[in-house]
Each structure stands twice: as C-alpha cells, then as structure tokens.
Amino acid sequence: MAGRDFKIAEPAGGIGRARFKARLRRTWSSLSDLILPPVCLSCHVPMTAHDTLCASCWSGIDFIRPPLCDRLGLPLPFATGEVSLSAAAMAAPPAYDQARAAAHYAGLMRRLIHDLKFHDRDDLTRLLGVWLVDAGKDILAIADLVVPIPLSRSRLLRRRFNQAARLGGEVSRRTGVPADPLSLVRVRSTASQVGLSRREREENVRGAFAVREDRRERIEGRRIVLIDDVVTTGATVSAATRALRRAGAEHVSVLALALATGEGTTE
Image 1 (tube, one colour):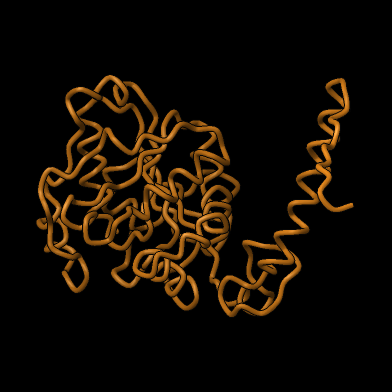
Image 2 (cartoon, rainbow, N blue to C red):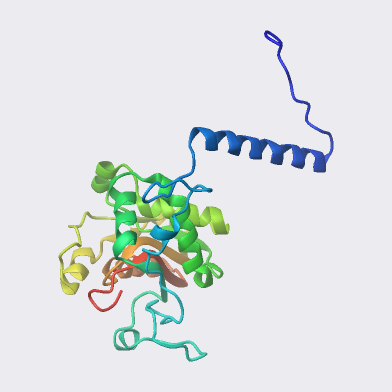
C-alpha cells in the first residue's frame, strides 16, 4: 500500500534476536547475490558462492602440502613421523625459526598475487587469507602477534596500500591473533629485489628494517608471525627477523602466500 511505512518488529529474547538477525543476513545475502552474482575470482564464470575459484582454476594452484621441512617450509619427498629438516635448512639455517607458504609461486598463484599487488584486487583478500591460515595453522596456534612486512614510504605512496598488511589483517580476523602493522618499519628505501642474486638481495635489505622505539614493548618477549606475499631467497624476511630479534622478539616465524624455489631455498 503506497505511502505507508512498515516497521519489522524484532522478536524479544536472546534466541529470538539471534534468529531474526540470521534471517536478515540471509535476506541481505540473497539480495546482494542478485545485484552482484558470485563468480570465480580468476576466470569469472558463474559460481554458487563468493570469494572462491572454480574447479578448473583451483586445479591451477600448486599448493604446498606436508610433509614439510620444519624450518623452511619446503616440501619433502616423504614423511618420517618426526620433525624433519631439509638439506637446505641444515646447510644454512635461516634467521627465522620457521616458514610456511600456501603454494608455489607459479601459474595462477603468481597471477593472483600480481593482481593483488598491482591491480588493487582487494576482492582476493578473503580467499588468500583462508589459504594463509590453512598453511600456517601450526605457527599461528602459538603466535602472539601477526606483523606484516612494511613497505617504504615512497612505495606505499605509489601503490596506496601494503598487500602484506591487508593479508595480515585478514589472518588476524580469521584467527583472533592481533595484527600489528605499525611496530616494524622500513628505515630506508631499497631497490626492487627482482633480478638480484642471493648476495645482492641480502645487501639490498641489510639494515632496512627496525622496530619503533615507542613500540618495542609490543615486540619484546612475543612470538611473531611475519606476513609477506612471496618468499624467494629469504633475504627480506631475514632482515625483518633480525630487527624483531633486536627488539626482543622470542620467536619469529614467516607466513607467505607463495614460495619461489628457483634459487634453491626460501625470499
């Protein structure tokens, strides 16, 4: 009837309110699906749910699954039933305590990360956060803080956002582990790591990170999970780990979307 305002009465009582809110969420979800139907995040074919990939695109992700090297997160050929280390971890133990990654940096995963970083694909964050939480469940279970790898001020101004901070916020939302995007900072700009040798990468980021003096108490004695998008040689996360240890961090692990193993170990 035109011109008449209707008000939906909310049921009394805790159970009634919960059911009422659940019905509202379902109604809103159905309406939003009519406006923006769910599609595959990669190829955009119609889907029955948001924030996921179709079966064909899903098969294009080379996920990293156990058994793993406990230190570097590299896949191992077989399980021993005990904590195992790869030859790379024994030959050159990393600065950080453990590393985990969701997938290899190849194929569709490479393109999704590129889209997140350079094409402002914030709609990817939820799915990528699910993959991070699954890959890092053992290190997140003992974590006190999630800390993203920071960008330099100039790069942040050009890109307008830090993809590691977005991912860290999603991990925090899903696990309840607090995110701290402010304590660890880049104290100097560095050149892009792309195309550099292992030694050049290490020199490029040496001393590039520090913990702010007014926030050292947030790091001291804490178990930290560093969040980054891609780990290649381990140079960046190792430099960040050393800065956190200088501030008194008890344990530092690394959690990344992808592992690029072309150089033989972990960036």
